Length: 302
Image (tube, rainbow, N blue to C red; front, top):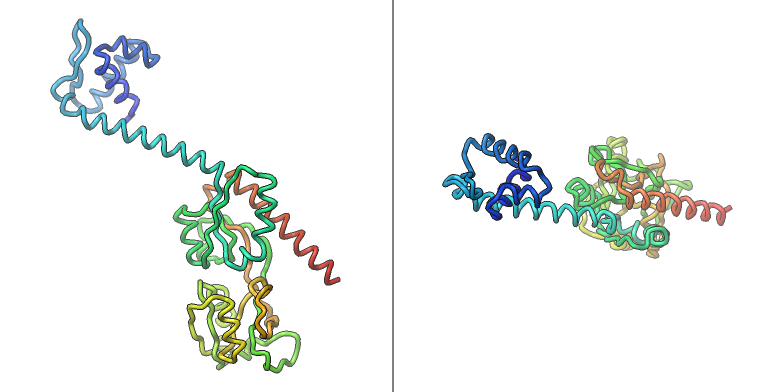
């Protein structure tokens, strides 16, 4: 139902005249009369009593009047809320990220983003992979820096930023036969599975080699530093990413896997947000900062 017709009818009733309502609303009298006839035909009811003195509601119109006023109030509230949301889209960016990303990448990215978009407020929601993807799909987040997962990413756009190598986390006493740790050596060992959905990145490593590499998996509810501390005290082994391990000082061995494995970090966003100005700017900032960051690290190593 066209709410413009309801609005026009209420205007005519409040002023007692189709002519006065037409003048106020910018319609011709014949145009407004046609709208009222169309509304009555649509409802199958006579809503107005017309006379030479003006118009008033019919009995049916009187009965429908509270509902029509409620409908217009709801339509106004809808328009006002939509307007606030449109304004928010230009002034606020709701961002999701892993803890490791907020420590290692996000400060530099946000500094660059603030430089080019100083009027945009960024809210940050830190969580695990499952939580972040659920919030993206329920529109609680505009975008997120997250690892790619083929199933969870359905219906979302994903822009890769960098492949984050996965590392074997081992007690310092572990004897290594080379620069990398063969996945098959996890077989039978007590494996501390990190919390917050990290198993989504780790399980494929073992699934490819399950017959020869199956560890005794112990699911935990521990954060990354706690996992590293547990490994450091000889309570098991684990797998974490290179980014996670950058600023965890506990005495453990952190070595690449053989065969190599990684999680693909990037920016995920709903398809209907792909044209959002703030998201486009954030993606450009993230790409620029990450490229410079690792280009600089490579130069220092070289």
